[in-house]
Length: 67
Image (cartoon, rainbow, N blue to C red; front, side, top):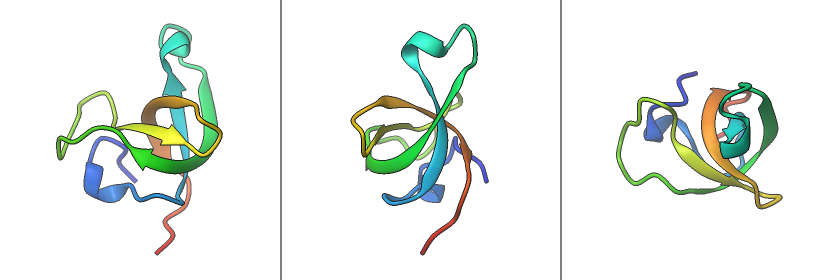
């Protein structure tokens, strides 16, 4: 599912994000969404989220679609 559309992402979902420090390498981090930080309905590089462990990054891929 597309990580650039805010409506696709809900707290509790398992996602892959790219952290700011990993943008050059493209390394992805897996985690569960705690908060959505991007207020716009779409963002071309991915919606910015905070994971439950506190890491912040842009969603690249949604791994599960709960709810």
